[in-house]
Image (cartoon, rainbow, N blue to C red; front, side, top):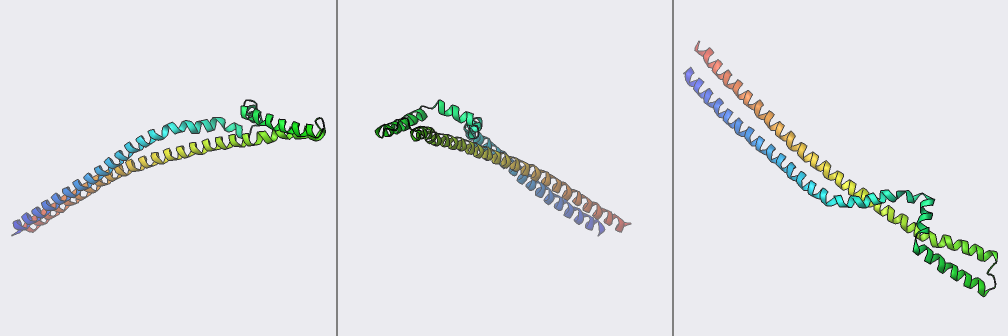
Length: 196
């Protein structure tokens, strides 16, 4: 009767070991699927990165021109080489001179003051517009960099999750298999002790 118990125990342990192997294989398959999903996500991330890459140049243009935002010399040089500024200033000065001439005040102090003000009035909108354009380039570049950073973070998380899942499945399978072998050894040992 004890050999029957040993046989039943052995069959039970063998069945448990087979179930454990199936469970371990299923866990490994799930981990491999997670790893594959991570690699697929990484591939899509690389494709998205390639789409964003050309826009880095726009942000770089903003960085290259950022000094203009606070440098009066750069702003002055911008105005000196800007035909729109010269056209605006010429138009304002023509209007001022015509108005002063009609009143007989061409060389008066208020006319000279108005001619000086024309420079500021013509320059301010152009400088502000250039500052806004540079700011837009910087914002665009910052958003592009943030999007690329998010893609990299997502790729890393997906790949790490797959690797960790695979390692956990292998560890769980090994632990359960070892436990089943110990159980089988215990059954055989108990059966032999009962025989003695």
